[in-house]
Structure formats: structure tokens, C-alpha cells
Length: 270
Image (cartoon, rainbow, N blue to C red):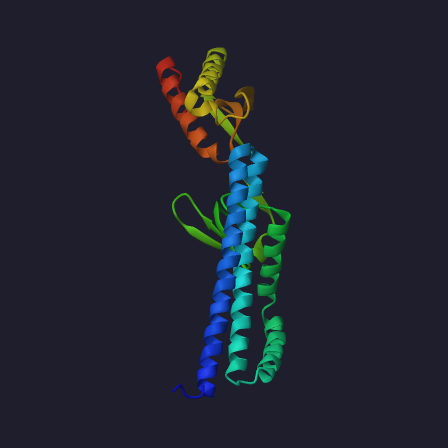
């Protein structure tokens, strides 16, 4: 014969139910969020446009922040429910929490500023996860945008945690497209017409290379003499590439140009 359920047993049952419901809701919400992000990413792949890529990045970033917010809200709500189930008065805790909130608000103004700045960064779409940016004196690829900080990773692997409230100016190096600027210094006694012809020919060869042709968004152009020095002059060429191809394309072209200049006997100034 089964005996009557004790208060402790009832508490355990309600606790199990509350935790189970919270877990199911969390799983459903996260699954729905991931499906939405995957759908946007699939649309990006179908369209293949820069705008679609930026939209997919923004949705992925928004979902990351929203998921963190939902987790915090659900965790706090679950704790309050469990405290009520076990007979722990929540009124005094809420009152104490309010007083502490006011006290912390005065002492944590920077924290509040960071959080507000983080929300505005996402709302305005200044940058998204995967973008390469320069902020607060550091640069790198955006690995995460949190409520309080933006996490950047440099090429050498260094990770920077930048408080969002300290970001006054943002330079996004991969928004829409990237422009590669090639400055070539030559000695004054260099045959300018010959060097210009070689540089233009190498730019055309680079544009015709199947490896880079799909990454180029504009025809490489030689702008001409950009600057004159005491014993040297500077030629400038530019071309536009896909957002994340700026550094690889620049390195590849400079290597090609060095080999070509060596073949043509054109020396760089000391």
C-alpha cells in the first residue's frame, strides 16, 4: 500500500517538474533559434550577395546575445520558483535585491554603460561576429559580442576583451567589401615608364588568375605617382576584393610583384 506523499516528496516532485519544464522550454527555444539562423544562412548561400552575408552575420550575433539573455532570465525565474516551492520567503529577497540593485547601480555605472553600448552596437549593426574591426586601439576578428564586452582575436592568436562602453570609434575592415592599397617605392633613377608598364601588366595578370578572379570586385587599377621623396617615388595601385580576402590578396600580389621586379631587374630603394 502506498503511503501519503510527504511535503518533502511534494517539493521534490514540483522541483523535478519545474526543472523539467525549464529544460524543455530552453531546448525548444534554442532549437527554434538555431533553425532560424540556419535558414538565414541557407538563404545567404542561395543568394550569394554581400548584403545577404551581412544579414546572416547580424542574425547570428543577435541570436547569440538573445540566447544569453534568455538563459539569465530563465535561471533567475527558476531559482525564485524553487525558493517558493521550498517555503523560502522571496519577498525579503526581492526587497534586498532591489536595495542592492540601487547600490550596485551607483557603483557599477561603467557596467551599465557597457551593456547599453553592447545593445546599441547590435541594434545599429556596427559589426557582427566574423568581421575584422579596429576599436579602442586594438584590431582583430570579432569572435563574440557579449552584453558587456566584444571579444577580438588577432592574427597571432592574442585575444582582446574590449568593454563595449570604451568603444568610441569603430573601423570595420570587412563591411561590404575591402580595398587593397599597394604602394610601391622606387628609386629616382628608375625608368618610370618601364616600371609602370610592368606594374600594370602584373595587375592584369593578377586579375586573370583563376585563384583570385572570383575574389576581385573591381578591376585592379594603377593610380600613378602618389608621393615624391628625397631619393624615391611611390606608385599606388588599388583593387577591391571580397571582405575577408584583403590580407591574403595583398600578400599574394606583393609576392608576385617582387618576383616580377626581380625578373625585370627593377630594384627597390635601400
